[in-house]
Length: 296
Image (cartoon, rainbow, N blue to C red; front, side, top):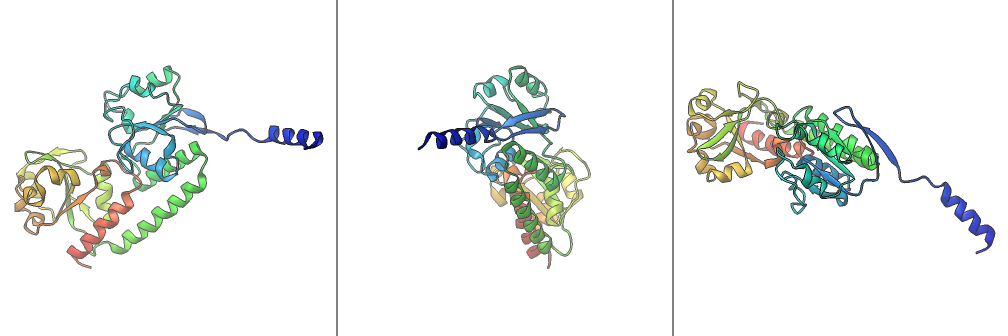
């Protein structure tokens, strides 16, 4: 290689842009400057899923107990509602990404301040329980800015829209009246209200959430019988915790409802409590089941 060629090569390399940097404004109004993060603590399972879908799962060095899909072997920093700053800092992240609802729990309200005081960058994404699928797309776009992969986000958005079109084509003709039961055991169960992921799922799949309240209420036989749902949804692990379908039929009031009499109890993945990228897939499954059971 001639001296002239070497000089030209050196100058060319010097003129190449550095690793792309981005300034991303979080839901808390704080702008975070990031450049190709390599050690990310991703709080909330939906954050983990979105990063995987962007093809950047190799950057995740830790998550909370909800980060079990697609992989469940990531180091855990603890329960999502009570996260220790020390445990997160010990993973030496160059960026912590979490959702506003994660940071709003009573025992997490000082977490962001503690992390930033320790010199850790924190990007706060919008809450998972607001905005439905549009909220998922917003979080996806913010993450695509962090990683510099807008084309991947665009492809995922198109995938969501394709699945949504299939959902709409498979909804039942008449919306079934639906209740979502959240069970820990046969004697410990609640009814989800009209806010959050459960409600988004019901409406998207073509059902009508008939819970007469917004938050979560303890299950009573009287309340459930009065609502008399056509369909009951439970989490996969919730149905397991009560002994399967036969166990669910023994829960307070269930057997006295149309759903119980017709054995129309449906299950969904445990992560639906948070609205994430699999919401369209979950809705499509339910829509098809309801279309079959409640008329085409």
